[in-house]
Image 1 (spheres, helix red, strand yellow):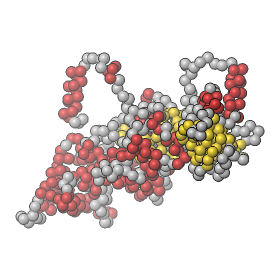
Image 2: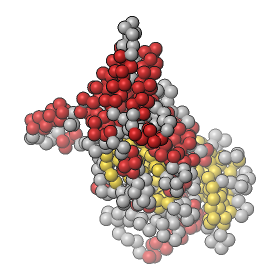
Image 3: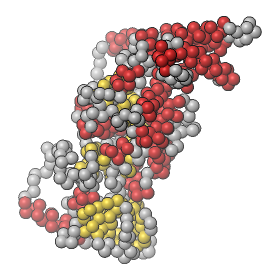
Image 4: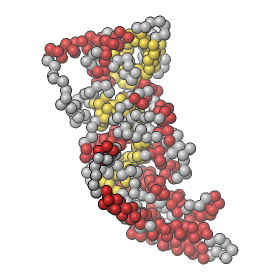
Length: 572
């Protein structure tokens, strides 16, 4: 997608020409242009067979070899797997992507059979033969015998042109060096998106690039990102708000009943049901003691009403005192002991501190959802310092607050929220890896229903096959970087639209910082080389250089002492 008026995509990153060859003379440029134009006018093959979504073509090997020497990179790749070709129709052109190739076994050594997937069609400018008014889908199919031609860079420029909708630039269209690739923001966020890629492919930097571009396009936005490794703090220190265990201050009473059970109850079987009954009764009684409850009439155990932990343990103690001697007090003691442990452990102070008893719900929601944004539209929630046994619950609370806020603010002017979840396979696992945590339930619900309420979900993962079935299919835009695992490739292939199959086959062969984008966020599937991101905007996810670091010495003893000190204090 390029903006033909240059208004939306005016900030294109210039191509580095420091090592470029000496500039050609005007005469040489004219000669190359004439040769490319002549090559583009000559067919490279013929249509053999037509089907609904694709067809088979025969390609002339001699013509393919001639094209390879062309100065236009799009013509040079014509006919190869993943490249684009065009087919002449009565009043225009059909664009298709080459899915695969095989030798013609009919005894013709100079031809290659290829399967193609149709991408869309455009009208032909009668005087120049150029494509214009390109659109996705096919209304008029060619017939067997129709000629196949190479798609030129100028063709691709028209095909990937912006149609005027708000868009963000993320890189350049492969194989060109100057056609800018963009994604339509409203379409991408309106129906969720997923960024997939194996470890080491540049996934985190690419995610930071996309989010930076969104923030630049919408400085009054509301973006909440769950960061499980503390990578993105460095990337958004100047353009967002960073929250971790030192300043998150998330009140424990914001948890609903299910989340309370995950944190406080560790029993199983019949014991778990008994513990749940006791906790439900005592939690409702503790919430009811707040003055807010008196003014609101009837409340439930899920109502986000502040309560004192001491009131909850007091209720448990009172219930235990009502028992006759024959009744087992173990369930009551289990819950009370767990609460006392959480209050005393410094690792849980960001959530279970005695200072968090005030009614700070509005302030907390405004803080994490950036309302107002004050020029910093993104909140990074660094959960790397959260104890592992409650990390899923913390993410569940933040996700549920996003959903509940959207539901209860329907009478207000719409304020869409983007929830981005890094390492999404941890929180929305498939049935084989499911552990029953509430975070999977709420994220699945957001994936299915969130867009009705103005919530966009962005999933980032290196193991799409470990995601819950159906969640990836809810993502209207899929950005796939290289995936090395066959199971992951198959999973993504099943979630992508039919017309992208030719691109999908190139997923294992993508270079670092390259991706395939398909779905609602783009007009047609594209292969993109991501822009370089400035050093100050990159996440802290660079791989260490073992050779360089292992050739440095000094200061190890002090480093070990400082590390042990932090280890013992658990970051307190």
